[in-house]
Structure formats: structure tokens, C-alpha cells
Length: 159
Image (cartoon, rainbow, N blue to C red):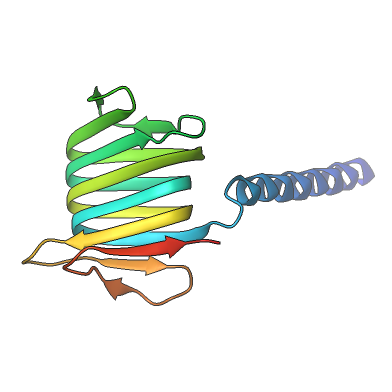
């Protein structure tokens, strides 16, 4: 019984240490970053600079561009991308899903319908909804959800 309790306590301490180490690595990877989310947006969204994002576009494309001045962003997508230049890859079709992360700088442009993105980014977010139809919603940090603007609007993310 004592051996079981000792094993349980050592395991709990190890899990706690691993969780705090993981949290420290994750938060330091995008130091000064801010949480950003879009929900079922329709139009165009652009995230740029550095951080980590998960994205889904129900119908449309995701364009990942490596900006000069740093390392290339890492990316993982469910579609095969097409390289359109030395620094840009485009993923298109129905149900495009991508994860992009890295110290950058990078720019990810989403165009289409059903744009849902979640991540921690230090940089900029530009939103531009289609002129008609539903726009979608977005949330930056702890602020309440708002509707996408119908004219291009850029927000600064992080410090």
C-alpha cells in the first residue's frame, strides 16, 4: 500500500511539473501575443507576424507567406498545397484545415466562407466581410464577440 501511494504521489508531482513546463514553453513562444478567434466568417481575414493558429475554411483558400526577416513558419494542413512563389503556398478547396506556428514573421490570408480561426498572435489581424450575407464574428482577447466589418479593418494584437 505504501509503495502504491508513493508511486501515485511521485506521478502526480511529475505530471504537475510537466504541465507547468509545457505552459511556460507555450506562453514564451509568443511572448506578448494576444488571443484571437473568428467564428464562421465570410470574406477575407489576414493574420500576420508571429504566433500559433489553428484554422478552418469551409470553402475557400488559405495562403501562407513567409515574410523576410526570420525563420519560415511551420505548417500542417489537410490539403496538398500549391507553391505559387518562393515564399508562398496556397491550400484551397472545401474544408481546408491548417495549423501555422513559428517565430516568423509570416502572413496567413484566409478567403472564402466559414472562416474559423483560433490562436495566440503578436502582430495584426485584418478583417473584411463580403458586402452581403452573413459576416461572421470575431473576438480579440477578453473583449466581447463582434461582427466582422464590411470594410477592411486592421487590429493590433499583443504588445
